[in-house]
Image 1: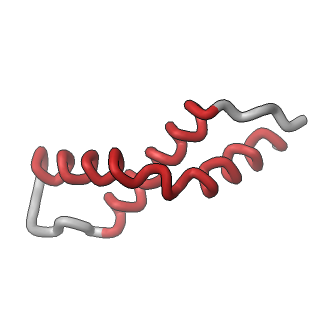
Image 2: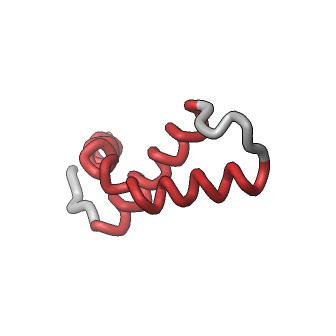
Length: 65
């Protein structure tokens, strides 16, 4: 059974997906610790919406299980 996805749920998933992608990609290799985390969070805040379609698909697949 597929349930309607809420905007907040999609946003949270999109943010998590983008954060994971950035962290695994090695962006900001010269930075460590707090500085790197702050830059990643800034990027997530600015660009999370780019992951909305992927996040919605992921959540829809999960709902079908």
